Length: 472
Image 1 (cartoon, rainbow, N blue to C red):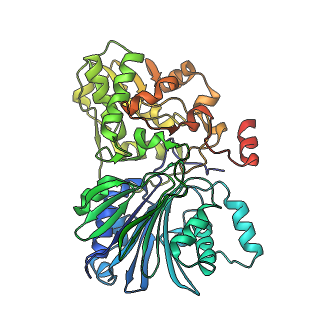
Image 2: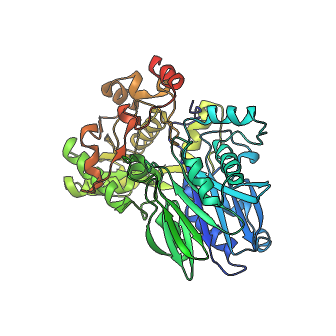
Image 3: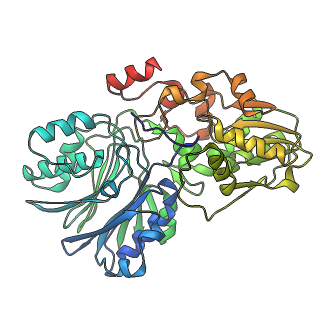
């Protein structure tokens, strides 16, 4: 099951970044900058593994990228290629041993892996490996993938063939980077749940979860890794295996709503434009008379601009965000939790006082944080607060890497829209209509996964999990 969350909000997922063909002394710094750009995808732990002429060394720990890596650490990681990872735990707990990349040493040499996503058949695969003698050092599904690749590599001629054989067995969401002593491989699941892009950096290549990380290192965007594709960076340049391509895609719609940075493009679509379109759709679906449109930082801002454009209501800055608050710290008492929201976000009172405000946010999970923000706006003098959400109501958990809690914890399962509005103390509440969700993709012909809203899973989750959630 997806683990419970202490706050009403979705956590980011994970981010991966890799480079091939860099000069000595540059690889670790490039990965550091790439991970820094992907920090929004995970703030629990991070790591870098580099390959120096066949010898793989790594460093990882709990914390943010600039906390874990110092110039001294980076100088101690020479190499010509490498991979990095930022993590938020969805499968496996928040412990140092679960930080990535994972590095294995086996009969064929060394293997490093960085993975974003969740498998849905981890339990069965792990049990099978344990029966055959495997001893696991972590509780994450990424180690299952690494073990499968290592076992297959013993019986085939290349690491890319081992990855191909492993993809025949794993099910679920995975965008991953696999580094052997001589090659760097990128692979994406056949549905394309999670993003993965390719760039060129000088004579070398870069792989990243988002294009914003390519920009951070000055790499030129080439294209996205196609769903089901295996891309190999080696001495011959880039080569591709497409045996698993051509299946029905299921891009995670929440990448466009919340996860990705607005300056990224995923599968040819600008995140910024998608979020603005969601705001314009909300203005058409849930119009209201008001004086000011504001967005909850960060993902609500672009939708608020779109709402303002469509409605003609002026857009303004309603909140000041404390950019120096990093990882979410857990405070057990309710009063302390309310104070933590104020530490991260403060209302710009002079902007909202005496005004009817439309507040845009990306989602409501439990409703507690949204209620606190509405209260903050009214305490600051807003005469009305109309809440608009740039996604449909959450009604189902996610099994593919988004930290949506079990159904019993979702406000939209327990209450009607009107009941939620009253709990928020908002003057009105409007969600994006599920039937029109695809319109936010701005005409792009992208098949997407909206299972957290609709319950229509592109891959059937394990029966025991579905049965448990359906009872909630």
